[in-house]
Length: 271
Image (cartoon, rainbow, N blue to C red):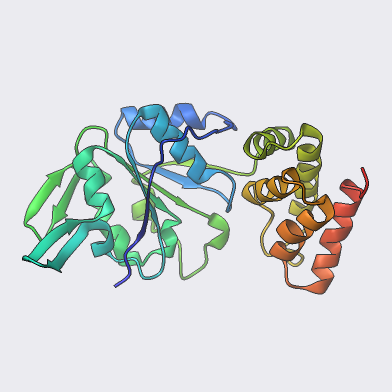
């Protein structure tokens, strides 16, 4: 039995750089008790956005990292055996429903298809969660909000959300920020100087223009922040970019060499 990876929101304020009207849209969705679907590539800020909005709305946040073995019981709850016999333990979705919290299902298409069926009664006017194990039919507390995310680039014939599920949500499309926005984010999150942040983001912009035959996945904003933190701590930029970008993005020698050439052109050694 694999329990879902659940992360409660911590007490730190999460920096977030808006890209458009996503903050306003999310606030209106919350006000109207509408579920939200976040779409975008890995590392573009989807999770940070949800953390930021939970803080803005002053609501608890339960984050579930979805995976192939995630079951409906992992979300809802199950009976466990303790010293005093069996007892029911709520899952993260049930806790969020009871508390009026936000439940965030991260990369939901990684979960088994039958798992998403349990959310349907929560995503229409009923806003209920049937608990077959306890016989309860929970009505979502005020403030409850269901949010799911996925990376459309991973979708294939075997995965993807059914239209009947997608049409229950208000959707927000995310992408990587433009270079100026991304440089501010990298600088804010890593403490690096603006010039180095701008050069890292220029490298990322160039790498993102490569086609899928060159790179399976584009460098994320998260990856740029990792690289910037290494540089900020005193590691030479040449070593930091090799570890955080070149070696991370590909195992193919030819592709790695192409990445190095772009880095050297935009981040000359010694400057």
